[in-house]
Length: 611
DNA sequence: AGCACGCCGACT
DNA sequence: GTCGGCGTGCTC
Image 1 (cartoon, rainbow, N blue to C red):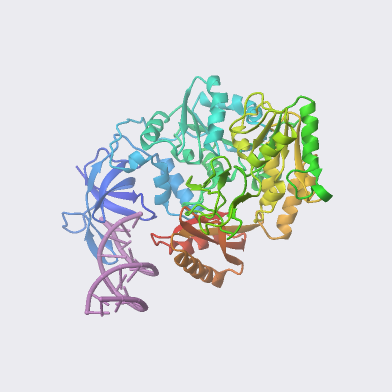
Image 2: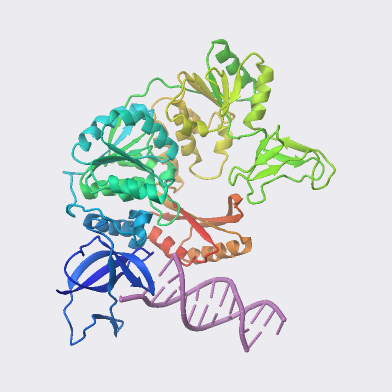
């Protein structure tokens, strides 16, 4: 029996490894979870490496030198795995991620373990050998198709082939997409299918983790990549351009980047799939890092309707009514898209001007005229809207602005014979349906609507931020796929370059947008970090972000803010943001992370968006 | 991540 | 004087 020196990684936010000792030869290999006494507490750690301990002098208890002092080592308290939890490759990969994102390895190891395995629970699975399968070589491609079904038929054969000798991971940006896709996919495969996402309980996740260690088709959201099995053979990233793939909380990763990195490590294929690529992926296509496989889209379905004169700025314009009239007369069905639920935008007292709001958030309520009630879209809190103002007891409460219910009621007056409903209350035979942008998620699989009319794209474009134009392009292009005949886009800014690029050769828009980004020193040519601090104490938040701003401004000339983040108050927390711009450099992200490390007050929460 | 230690301002 | 918030450093 020999004494082993065991190098252990903790699951806390640290890169350091700690030494423990262990008497014996069996049961310990890299990747095994062990229980150790860490800082007086029992903690789960991962064995990184083992060494034979050679006694120096006549010490019986193994010890090490820490800063010149000899410290006795603590023993490994227990071994939690029958074989191992992480493979050697996975440990190495956590180190790669740690380097790439300049964030401690412990955070990535922690992502790789299901919650159940982070606690001192035994894992009784016997894995054969800790040897990772490697593919022959990395390759990447972008598959461009207008609907999920279309893209699916382009990569389905590949998935079937790869499943014969390993596992395949298909990632989705949101749960609703995953659910819709599962319906399409599930009957085509007779292998094991596992679904992985954060809405599942810890118990469900560990269950799925256990059965997905080999030859499994895994469908999941962004976290699922951290649970990849060692026989992973192919990764598909659906709707690669979706912003949901970026995690705004530490350790700040983007699933698309990790997917490509992992495929490189394993020498397997990575398929990015989507309606349109992100700007970054477009550049990767242009530089031949990714191949492009494109389903030639059918004829263009977007019609830009310029609003001028009387119609400009109006929701109920003659242009809208004319289009509806034509569609209804031809016996077709149409969806009108307006991005505000409820009856109106604000409820306020016509006497004292008091605006009714949720007391935890500063955003607009979803206002119902019938129940005279407002529901907060963020925290679901209900606010009653009285007839007479409850603040001044003297003045009618008015509901102003436009919501889909108001549009619905006015259209009913204009088209009394037509069946008009909101999206939630639609019937199979509804002729006009009023919907918010929720239609994009729920109609991942197109339904039987002939036409769509987008009413509020000008409102969308008015939102501050350099990427609204690009986002609007992706949004309209996604909507375009949902309708059989036509998508009408009503705008008062018909000369804006976005509207010139919605039909014809799609790369034209990418070229123009990239030119603007280059001229204005914006991503993907420059880097941007947006830091958002939030806490219940507004003064503290502002002070902290002010200090942060000053510290960053010493080294970086391009610091903007603090800004009030919209919504400013969210679930009782006040939000301020900073925007930092920098030339592309290796250490930009790292320098930001160094600065935000100091914000560790339990009161203040932090989000960072890197672009 | 927690937790201890130590510094500095507010307050009976 | 001392209580407590919070910045800093450490964990084998």
